[in-house]
Image (cartoon, rainbow, N blue to C red):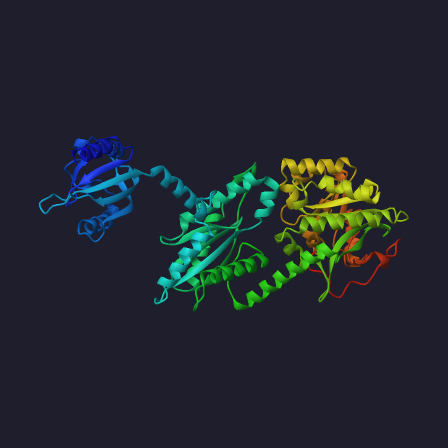
Length: 566
């Protein structure tokens, strides 16, 4: 027995794992050096004190219960994952195995041996993995997995209360333009700032999480009704709407927010889905708006899903077609060029115009494929009509510029068709020009170097900046249709005249869009516009229906388009 006792004492002292012997009251009788080191204390400072003095307060109740069960004989041994507090007040995680080691005999003192393994580093690694699984790394916000768990608990706790739960889905307007134009670093900075602004203004007890690239979801507990939820949404929108300097630009972000309230047996996922549907409705209504969910919105959302699925098939199987609208010399009305405008031959709904699918194509990341198709078709069209000899205009999305390498696409389309580059004009929106990155500008310069003409489209539609013309290789601009609609009004005439003078002063091509009446035509000529486009000169038509030559005046259409066609 003496040999066994000597072996235990030797093992006890030399063990790299902390060990302690406790009496039946939980007082520490002796400890080994490893345990003393774990607590950052001398052995003399530990012996004679109850183990509870070194235990984390949150683990006390459980540890007392566990010790009593072993001491009473209910358990012969147990293992717990627990926290100690060391001499510096830091938390130390340990895996503790407690065993009843009392010697036999009625008069023998009760003794319990604890083996304490330091697992702090392992715990920190596990905490980090859990955080990465449940929190967004960029913003530090909970992710959707954690949010749904919290939302589920909130719905359960409010089931029997008058107050309800609401969900807000907040989407940053035009985020893709900023991300594509200014770069991912600027986009990430914007996301982090918006996240911080939302966190500052939400109520105590509410939760905000990041969802997808540019969505934030807010769970509101204890809200009385839709008006109360809307009031919080308005506070969030106001907090976000202030300038942010990004990559030498000043961006003023806005949010489109959808609101949904908990209903009977509505799941967490369904509540988020409804709020997301309402958010999409807010974007379609003009952005920077707050919309509450209505049941009819779900039908709209299902229709959009059907359109997206059908559009993917159309792009893949070639159900898209291109129509061509004339651009004329205003003085002679001779056709100067044609603009290529995409259409979709839908198997059930017939010919669809761009306003029914372009926005959906952008959301589904199909716009680049669609743009490449139109570019190839337009180049083939122009190359097949050398007798016409005019130019072809093609709209280009900002998603095709820079990282998508527009110059490479253009070069391939020109080589495949054999078209003279000087006959190709690419129309780029003001937004794309104004927020162009160095990569985008280089891409546009490479396109211009091929001999292709770049035209600023929809000039004056809300993002106008002369710097967009001066800083980029722009050789022409198109005046937005909204100014053509104002011709005959003194202010509208002054704007038209001034921009026409600007084009001649800069030596660039000037085209006035949306001309639908003879009066507008006469005003455009008087103001100095060189070229014009609109229903007065011809509607977009398939290639086979075109009659090349001089365009004769035609009656104004009964229902002129409200938007510029794409």
